[in-house]
Length: 135
Image (cartoon, rainbow, N blue to C red; front, side):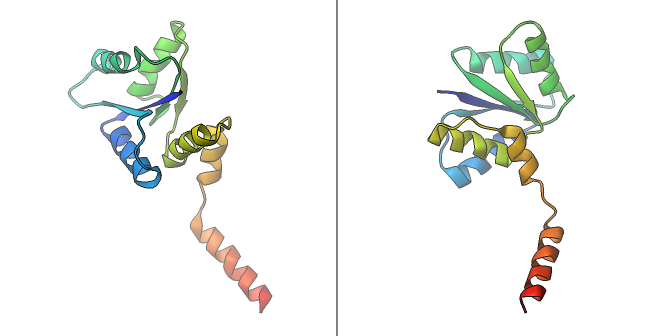
């Protein structure tokens, strides 16, 4: 079973997991490793390594490209570790992980994320235009 590891500055990853569980129910294969204000890269990497040491297969979502959590794991990839790392995590990505695991489909996290970014005002305006045409 693939595990999902969420990493972030502060508790964003912890709260994102809670939000996903609010929608999808308890998720034992999703884990959070926050970089807390009093911690450095070494502390964060130790927490990460302690978590993943027994995982056979896992993917990592990070909050921010270029931030300490993503950079710390990127360095591990450059040292030869086999880690799939995505930056820019959001709730649709986490739900994509859960859904693809449930149905056995190959997830497309990037497409899911792109498709989930929508300016609601434009949708409402288009819907109003369609309603006007129907009258």
